[in-house]
Image 1: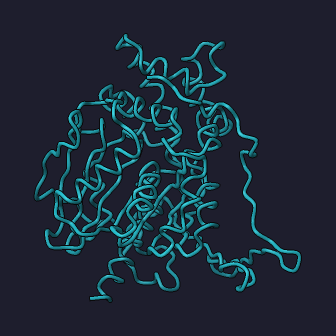
Image 2 (image 1 turned 180 degrees about the vertical axis):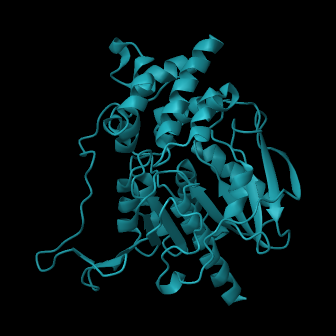
Image 3 (image 1 turned 60 degrees about the vertical axis):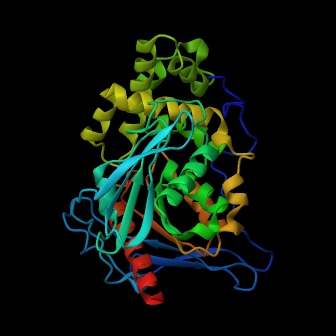
Length: 396
């Protein structure tokens, strides 16, 4: 792999910069009410109303449905659905080199929803089906190029954001779907935004989680030492694989090893890269998640493909490309779900997206990290799909 200009060439933008629009005649304020919901408003003629809902979930509680509900979301189901099996699956050849795995579950005649997995390189899993009502939704999962069951495994050739967007369209046409709901978390939120901005007429609704806009400051935060301030114990094994004279840019140093001619060098780098992310993905570390780093098949695709995309800045033409193109999807009914203590994709990105897209519902879960499987986040993802389901039913 040849690395293009790395994120390690620092931008002059401060890492934690997050400005709020103000005018000389008004100020932006947050007022905390007696319940866990607060509203922030600014003059309606100058700026849209910005609102965020804080949801009081306790990680020790086994039932999500008893968690705080308010306003228009009151009464929505919040518990993930039972595990189901696909009713059809297959492989779609999307180029001379790449073939992607896809599957369908739920209602064959239901409203289509496509699940975009994270990483990139993470692949899908059976639990991904549980965010959707199987009686209402036709649930489509697929493994992106080089990930999961797609072939060739961990392949970086012809593997860009724009290739994946083309694949999503090829899959939609293959399954004879006119339009569909799009669901994505982490890198899946990146791809969901990029796909929707490229094909807004094909998207009926969006559910986004753990927002990742693939900007330099986000890559620097997680891979160049920012997150190490919170997880020094997890960071040091990731850091120590790289000699001190190569630590000016960990993205480049790992890219060199993940693309080595020696397979064991690749695997060692992949394990260290994957464990770093898995150890930081939950507010309370999850042993099963961390063990994914020991799976050489999973970690090689995960680390190689992530590093490839991050070295190439997501193949976007500008650092804030996804924010700059929000007008293309402003009309789409959308929900943003963000864990307050997400270390992998810190809340600054969700907040920046919320500020340029205040029309989208914005849900902040106060006792959650990054993972979609944390109780509060899972509850909000299910509720977001329920809200879109009810909206679609109301149109029929």
